[in-house]
Image (cartoon, rainbow, N blue to C red; front, top):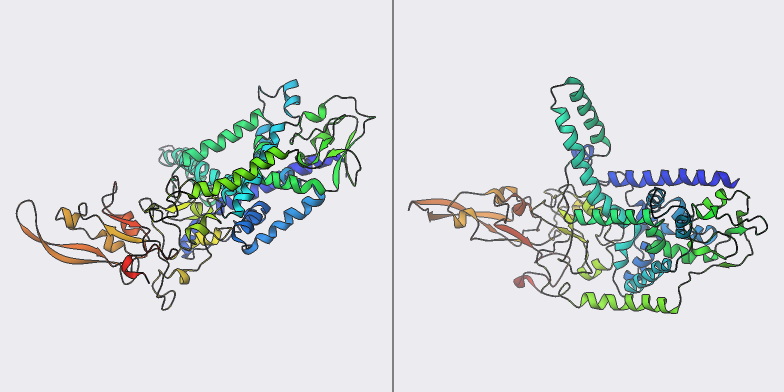
Length: 546
């Protein structure tokens, strides 16, 4: 096939996989059709890109000493890289496609000679290999820190928790006034657009996420950096790209340079995406090439061609150096003990750190969770949010239940369905044991924590005012919240009977419905802590300890 056809095919491939990724991200929510049917399940393979991610597979295996579920599918990416080089980065990766698109925008930093010079190989491109080494060593010691920088985790976390909610808000802010317009044409247009978007890209509820602004700004900064330096993320930071670059040193497909035809015009550098030095007179850097084929397509003399089994001088391995390799090893080895030398895993850990149902023990959770945000995006009640300080620095952006914004739906196990690494073990509503009539004689349902009352704020206890909202909202059967009638004296000196709520800790599952529904919204009188959670044998109410 002529080289002129390859860049066109590459663009088609990039657009297809980017649209596929975005479609799966949009589907990572409970669509209105699923909600109306009462069958809360994922109907799309939303974990597909994570399952194909060799970085996730390798670090998960190192951290857990096991390969979770379908992560062996990552060999579909890893094995062809041994023969074709970093084709995944140039042809498939949606993060790479976004970097490619943004990097082609005009920028003052990339004009004329500056553009040519910026596309030459730079020593700072080895930073990604240092990041990879540090991440692999940290995974060996049981921490999935590398998941924070995985390109798919970055995309889902940034787009799903920041950009899509912002798009939802902006779209509804535009369409709702149109739907209420007195002009028939405007009203009809608004209603039609709202119906179409609601059935395709809009979420059925307006989600809000803690740190959504921070995540969105960080993502936009990365895109801005790509306008200044072509594919800055791919060249400098991406650990998946570093892994594929290291594997590609054995690839049999390479760049052939015909020195007799080259006139040093440097056109091959104008659109080079990887900074791999396709120009003549210097060795080609195989581990940096993204197989975009732009250099071969740009050469007016046909001096550049991609061939199999070529025998030319090249830099096959990453130009890392002993000092930087040792830096990566030391950073990875030191990061885990330093971050775990705090209260995150001890008795004084944050009491409001409520993990999703099915989550494994905290130390195992941190060795599996890649901070992808899939569980937060899919939660129908917007109850899961990224942590900040609640789980320590090591647990940054891992999921936690925040009952004030939403409670855990009794029949919902979507978070366990979409988790790609087993940080949230896949369970069924029967295993969860919260739904009446589902699960048979389920004696030990999954518990996220236990509810407690602040009697100084509770209306029946402190203000002699009737309120049984928490008892009405309690979803388990028999109810974990019960009321007892008591005679109290109000401010006028009258004796009245009110129903004062109490919690039965043997029935409470920590779903957070009571805290969510409490009328005292700024600081609810009932609150849920992690004590009594199923996943931790040590975090139990004292009298129930064995």
